[in-house]
Length: 145
Image (cartoon, rainbow, N blue to C red; front, side, top):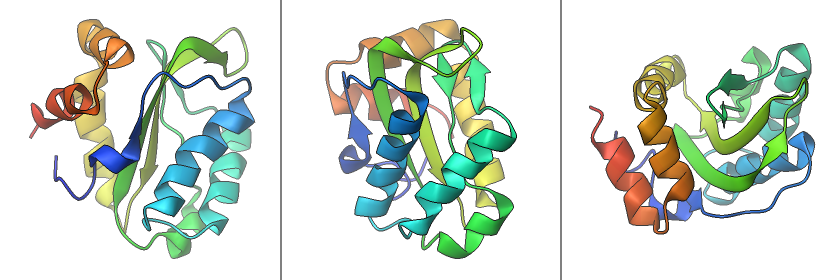
């Protein structure tokens, strides 16, 4: 995965987030602060969540914007946030690994497939949730090309 898409500044470890909305705003905020998206993208991420949950199973959620949000994307990027205590995404779905995505054009599809490869392995998800350094997160994702 390209170093511009995921860099140390996009990773936050051991956060405590109490609601799904707070969690989505947090991962979207990182994308905004790092210049990948305009602030409007965060609202589109929340709208997307209302349409259908971004909970993927295995303690993972991948918040991203609606189709309309594409105009708010400046550059493709992802943010990674670990929440070891978990945050409730509804219906008893607990999320401990949040991966926010912003993709230019159709680039998000390629990123989603790479994330799916990493997160389909329970041991990778556990390794990411337990990561003590941002380098460990970068290493886990860099193994996917």
